[in-house]
Image (cartoon, rainbow, N blue to C red; front, top):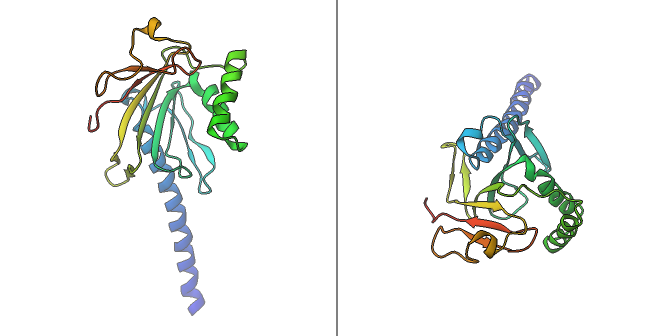
Length: 196
């Protein structure tokens, strides 16, 4: 008799674990898409993480945009969106990190490869959208990210202050500025004030 009661309980437990994994995948997709412009969310390719923290595709894309869910292996919170033209650059970074390379090594190796012409860089003007925050989190009940800020990174490889007319630091909150001028990593940073 006890065995008959135990079997349905085990089935229910397995079912609940399956639902939890499914909810996690659905939540990862929803949170990742919040980094993307509204118009491209439906067809964006979604990357996320499995139950072991491994980087995986959660949904295939159809429109040339990629979003990535928050990485549970990293401190803080960050979801991103970028165009497929930036994927070779992003994928190379992930590959080097998976081989145990630290941030400095990744930057150095990608720079050498970009300058040698063996690493395809994002198109000039390609945008990376970042929704981030040290204590930010995704709320599955409201389907919103709480406590996060937004940032735009506009790739401008080799751009300089002279070629863009931009300052090398923001003139005020939310103002655009050029970071790493004259390098393969040159980009325009725009960080709207918190709450905007």
